[in-house]
Length: 132
Image 1: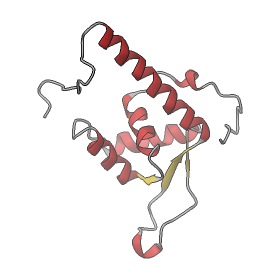
Image 2 (image 1 turned 180 degrees about the horizontal axis):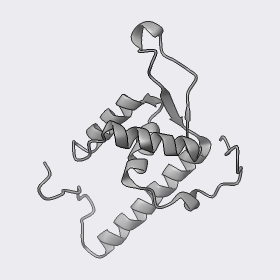
Image 3 (image 1 turned 135 degrees about the vertical axis):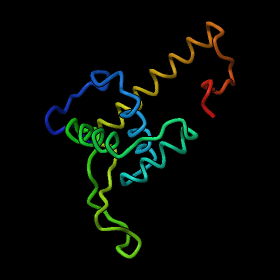
Image 4 (image 1 turned 120 degrees about the horizontal axis):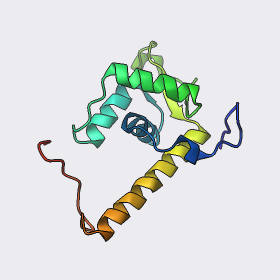
């Protein structure tokens, strides 16, 4: 895995907890390289429309993730006939992958605690009242 250029021994926990926007962007990129609009679509689809990330939130988040070296811009491009040359593609860095895994583990621990307190069942799906 790639290491941070500025600090090769970055502790993933030092980035936690992540904001929801950061977590969703990293989670979208855990599925592979994507351009900005595809990240927005992934977030909307994976949350069944509960979260719709606007361009300002997305690109502000991407800028901060690039600065923190959690993601990197990809040099690889799809076939020019199938792509818009203005698109920028992003992928997780090695540190970014560790951070999103650590946050997913943190969420899993919270879910286990909620189950232990009988707040949700073993197969419960989170349903937010008032959100379809």
